[in-house]
Image (cartoon, rainbow, N blue to C red):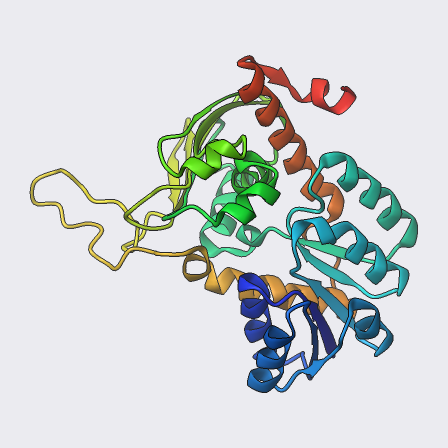
Length: 334
């Protein structure tokens, strides 16, 4: 199949490399406002260059991968759907939840499949955790802990356009809590602060946050995030049930060291970046998209599912701003 890629920044270039190695993909067409980026991808992966998204779609592609800036997501998703081309788009659907809902309305009417990039759904550890919860082997859950800690903050321009740490970073934790447990979040309480890069605070954002989520069955989920984790990229989930407990991300490359005498775990090289931590998951995610394009599977993460994590991010953003608990019903109806 022939796949088009819009946006060749850090993640777009990574997706181009991944797609070029998939057996189902026979050719690539790329487009980026930076001509040198498109040229470099064409030379390295034998891709054809289109000078605009419109030209890329007009040239005939079987599937469209969107890795452009967040602000461009809604228009590019609509363009792909209007052309009848299955779309893969990196999260988030849009910069604001209102824009995301508008995209959802259009996608529903079209019937064209759209997959949103929540790659942790394809990570072996998270998949095993979901299976353990769904099979009942942990018993009834009482506590979930989810962590995403980045080794260093993104550039100032990225932070300014990200929509905030809950919408940009924590949203992965929110999606995993829903996906692994099969439960919905009913209420949140969030706190945050800035102890690092000044430009994050100047953008009205926090660099370190925690949120307590109450799930619809009474389970308590605690989410911890930070832009500053000097030891590496730390993504974990702990699931505590009445019958057993389980952890995701507890491997020899965990970027944490023990203070206990004689303990050498973990002894491997710490994960240093999200693309290092989730290389296999990204490959599985894009392989799934080729199956969506081929019509052999439904979208594994629809726009509607992606927006559910977005609503939790909205509630946490409001909670942090107003220093109070916020229900999901409030943000949905407000």
